[in-house]
Length: 324
Image (tube, rainbow, N blue to C red; front, side, top):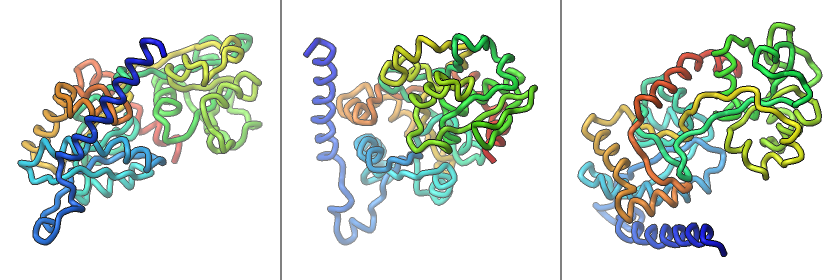
């Protein structure tokens, strides 16, 4: 075990120990009886995902921590709700079932459009608050800039992906590119447009590796996903990446945002924000964050980040139209 592994292992052991402490110090509603059970009031975090079990397990310690900081608002314990779509989450928010939501920028803009949430925190995951998406082609394709993609095809991952659809599609639209949906990989777009496909609709195993292989084998001319995946050799093997070339990169945008329900009063929303922002400053809070998919802290959204989000907001409706 090298020094880095030792540090990571130590942090995980610490997180597990402190998580147990959190569970011991937060009231569990299922253990209440009689009049106490009637008064059970969970502080609920909402997550949009198709992996409910892992998300609930990861986020529950943080939900419990937040409930413990907000007992003066009547919360007795933490709870996590996972829905597969933003529309389902929207209903939960409107019904008052969810107080805090963690989501990607794409889902955040979708929820925000109904005025049911406000963006209130930037979540650092694995010590990183943001990412970009890269658009790449083959070296020998003679495609070196976005305008040269006209008449060609780009593959995205799936309609719900932020880094492998929303960000690059928004970037293309902002740069004057008109996108044309294709029904099959053999269909060609109009000469003045860039055709697009979702690999999820063609392969069961839809991932960044297969997207890069499609470009490598010249099935499509371009693909796009996060710079983090691009740099990961397990995602894009060296043999493949050596034949590929990044021709454009999006602005840096949040990996994950925290949203508060606008159904809550102003004082309660402020208390939630303060509890989030300070969680990494104490042992129990930090432990709950580390369990939450290696979140290291949650901070206020800076002016520069808001500016980049605003640029994405301008193209949101156009990107949304691509999947309708």
